[in-house]
Length: 119
Image (cartoon, rainbow, N blue to C red; front, side, top):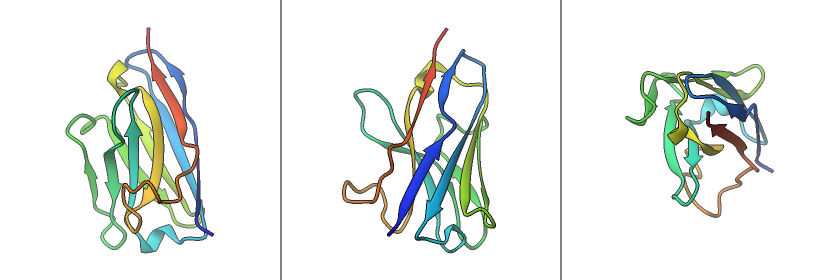
């Protein structure tokens, strides 16, 4: 059974940093492109960062490019999202997901981790 457990969120002031973690089980992250999604209040879930399986190339939404960094630890089967220079518009619930399932309601979503950026 595939499962993702996100952690590391919290309350931070604008300009602050957080590091999110996504522990995966039932799936080997090194074999899959892995994504971080943000579901902001009242908005649809959107892709913010991606790390490719083979090349370990990364990609980012324009809104977070230059501020967020996605990485992975294959030994720990964990994906990370380093979030710097946080802005209020980064507020929401962050989820990770394998590209195999995509941004699909039927995907095995975890509970996510809440990030709140506010002064």
